[in-house]
Amino acid sequence: MWELSAAFITFTVVSLVSIELMYYLMGYPLDINLEGHWFLSTIGFLIGAVAACCVYYLLKDVEF
Image 1 (cartoon, one colour):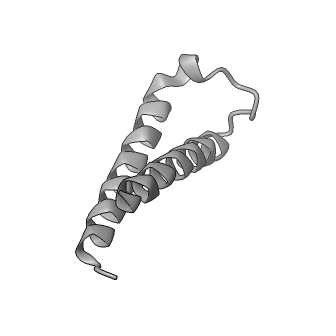
Image 2: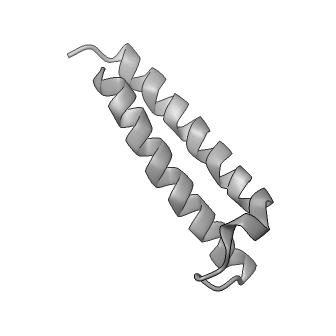
Image 3: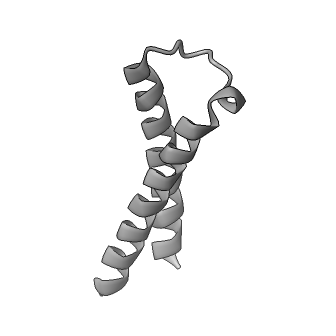
């Protein structure tokens, strides 16, 4: 069960950080509307999903 918790936290953090980083690299201000730029948001959420899957499967293989 803790693998799912770690994957959810990873998804949330990595998604938000990657979206903000992409907006910063593209030169958008921080107060921009997310709905207007759905492509960058989608890429950020996909990066978060990949990171969450990696964390889940890495922790699933480790036994304490």
